[in-house]
Image (cartoon, rainbow, N blue to C red; front, side, top):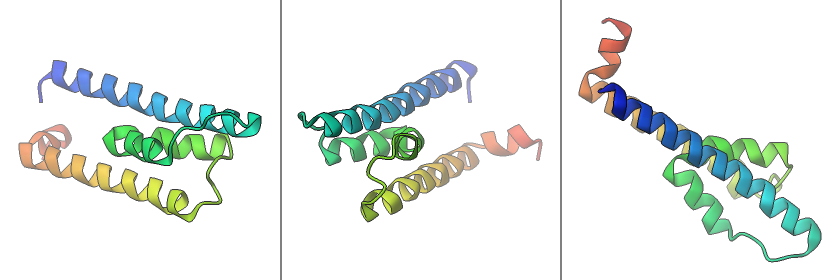
Length: 102
């Protein structure tokens, strides 16, 4: 994998995970103040497009959505699926084997 592509991917993942984390915090803040909320579908969308680690971390840092089973199970499941897909792609492209020197 070219270094520039890898760096852009890392940058994207950092941004989307920070956004997911902040979305959880903002929604919790809005819930406490009785204001307009972020839709659950938007929180899951942020997770599905690469921000699952940030959303999952935000759930527990802000103690938000931790009583909803579909968040408690869904966020780590999405993270697992994203990691599995990433490893599959890296393996298929040969980059994973090259990285570990196999």
